[in-house]
Amino acid sequence: MADTAAVEVLADVHRGVGRILLNRPKALNALTTGMVAAIDRALAAWEHTPLSAVVLASTHTKAFCAGGDIRTIREHSLARDAEASERFFASEYRLNARIAGYRVPVVSLIDGLCMGGGLGLSVHGTFRVVTENAVLAMPETGIGFFPDVGASYFLPRLPGSIGMYLGLTGHRLDAADSLYTGLATHFVSVDGLDAVGDALADNPGDPVDVVLNRLSGRSPVAESRLAKVRGDVDWAFGAPTLGEIEKRLHHLDTPWATATLATFEAASPQSLEITHALLARGGQHTLRECLDTELALTRTIIRTPDFLEGVRAALVDKDRSPTWQRASRGGPTPPA
Image (cartoon, rainbow, N blue to C red):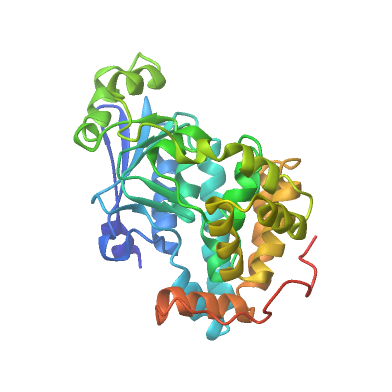
């Protein structure tokens, strides 16, 4: 595992800038336990190294990181290997916390897909640079899981009710949407992305934000599509219950509301309930508390029929037709 991780995560220090490259292209950089450990080791080893910043990126353009290797977690659950799953989630969440408190700015260069665990790697860092190819999402309710990696901390802190909307629906954000929500901090075109590391090394005395602003160009997307429906998002997803959210979406009767209702119908009812409960209270807890709650939840959720079925439909058989345990909500109450 150690040898594999050494190939899948490349780490070095170049001219005072730490560089961590995800290098598992065939799996879209889906994180394994070994990869998480390798990233964590690199950051730990640089704790006392003079650095101006750490850059986290991918070796290929299709994906920054498509998430955790959730297919392997399903295999652990089927094999009743709870210890292996616990190792993955516990180490991943420790890494999220380390990035959040790291002593120098962590700059993530997001080109391509950034979902689930990819957001856990990037959003807790200081700066998130997106290109015109960036796609950000937390799609867990569609696979019988819930938004984790600290999502119960960072989603409730987005403007208005955007976080609840993203967590429940798994809506995909482009570069303009990502900047609008604050999940991204800067835009740099694909052609200029390779220059970020050198620019940081060339200007070690300048604030990282200033360096990134010099490289930033105009987003190719003229206006955030999410911004255009922001009022409806805040009204519908600001409702206190899932049932009321659905009622408000029906009342709106717009193309956006209709599409959102269809997403609700396709998601796991169990996942929607758990996600709504997590996000409703996440805004009043610390990142550490949120990560601890999420870790406790994983121990139960990954053994449920909805998780096993959702991952099967999305990642194993890829028929995209999961059969959820309950056709509608109204079952067990999510953990408190």
